[in-house]
Figure (cartoon, helix red, strand yellow):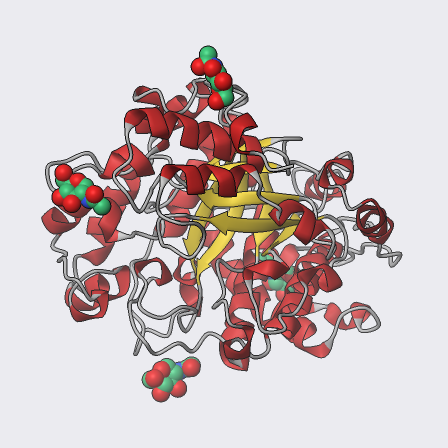
Length: 468
Ligand SMILES: *[C@@H]1O[C@H](CO)[C@@H](O)[C@H](O)[C@H]1NC(C)=O
Ligand SMILES: *[C@@H]1O[C@H](CO)[C@@H](O)[C@H](O)[C@H]1NC(C)=O
Ligand SMILES: *[C@@H]1O[C@H](CO)[C@@H](O)[C@H](O)[C@H]1NC(C)=O
Ligand SMILES: *[C@@H]1O[C@H](CO)[C@@H](O)[C@H](O)[C@H]1NC(C)=O
């Protein structure tokens, strides 16, 4: 992998790096996010949220606007209410829609609370049972041949202030501390192990360390260490399970009789993985036992040929937001890579700060985008655009949205591909126009997005805007 990174660096052309395909991911990602499924953001489904018992307010910390506030307000019914949401928001008919529209990848935003043992129930409130829904959804995606990226979206301790997507809307941001980094790493170990052990997780190809850290790196102390520990955790779990990892010469070992015993016997790896990572594996072992029971996953190596099945598995693609997501001397996740790694950038024009609020400025900006090259120059390649949409700061015409969709797909597709936010949003009186610019499904219906994601309404859309 390091050789590949260097060749990307010397060429400075992302396209060449893509020749090195990432295991399990399509050569070109045409994807959607499964947002508001296992991390609910109430702005995306306002009528359903009110019907569930939630509330709307302009400052999301002041009412029942998040999963945390909901679980705190309704401790006895929260699990049942969320089960209904999980079963209806993403169901077989949604998978069928993805297949029909040629989607080959999904990014699945997840909360730390899906690994239930990580939640401190005296001070943290979240629904239970999401992991069973994840298993169900992944089985459906596997049957459809769709690759999945597990995205640690809502982190323990809250990683961003004042956001519904953090799971809890608060200014009290405590993720960037040793205690919460440790919990995030235990989550990582458990999800990595499940991805390999549970046949329902077979099309899980990548695991993303965290969604959108605070952009100012001076406010994210310890993030560089977390990046190193994240990759080491994934690789240590894989080696323990008997999966080989390029770049590590140490033989994968699975002398233990089952997966939790394998994770516990980390002393074998003391020369490769640091003390924190070895502690993470020991702490993850009993959690894995619990979750495997909950999901009915076989963890005993001698049965059903589990050992030989694992030997045939490729390692997961470790994934980070790209280095240029942050400013103020950020750590570079490329420095943490062992084995296959990919990078994620998010681009929304509607929140401001990217281009002037008019059609020409938007198209000029996106048609001349240099993010893929800028990231490749720092070793952050392959890069995909893991969140984008059609939203704008101005009232967009239908004619413009056709161009806006084409131009973004053209630019983002020059890298490893793109993942739209979101696969759908609610269509209701309360939601108003929301779906027009935020829903992939609605975007196809309205003709902004082509039925075949590799196609364009007009592949020349950028020609008038490209500067020499
Ligand atoms: C759980 O949270 C409570 C209240 O914040 C705290 O006192 C306790 O130490 C925490 N327990 C663990 C195991 O971290
Ligand atoms: C795993 O193996 C260990 C050590 O042999 C044993 O103590 C433990 O009960 C086993 N656990 C499971 C879940 O099979
Ligand atoms: C967009 O349209 C709405 C409804 O027609 C109108 O209230 C609003 O002022 C318009 N916004 C802009 C920026 O033109
Ligand atoms: C496609 O876009 C180019 C550049 O704006 C334009 O010249 C051309 O007429 C468009 N083609 C169609 C079929 O609309």
